[in-house]
Amino acid sequence: MKLNATDPNLFFSRQDPDDPRLGDWVKAWKHSEPLSEGAFVIAGYADDEGIRINGGRPGAAQAPKAVRKPLYKMTPSLFSSDRIEILDAGDFDPTAGEIGLRHESAAKLALE
Image 1 (cartoon, rainbow, N blue to C red):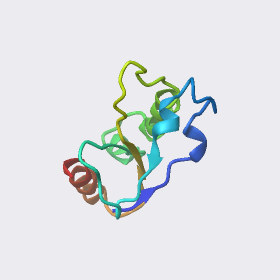
Image 2: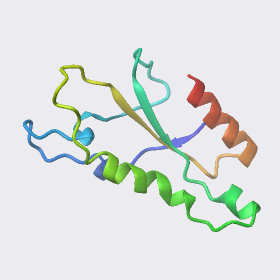
Image 3: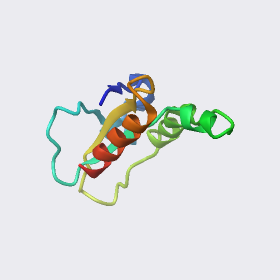
Image 4: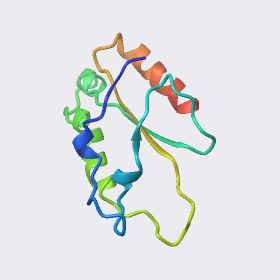
């Protein structure tokens, strides 16, 4: 399974400890690193091949970036002292093998 790193510019920060954003909390994650219990992992699937095969309109490949951009600008709850570990695994490489194998790899990661 090959994942391409997320553009670090998407990890939004106001550089203000009194006004944190999810981009301040999220950390890039490599699949080889162990996960902590309760960690939340974000992985994108920027691939239009299945849509093209089925005669749809390409554009889904832009979705991971389009989702991350506003997500990482959101303010985490300041009413709780608990801090959720958020890890960004990047996007699955749409050129890494046949579409069925890519889907299988994504499913395996989701089940970890």
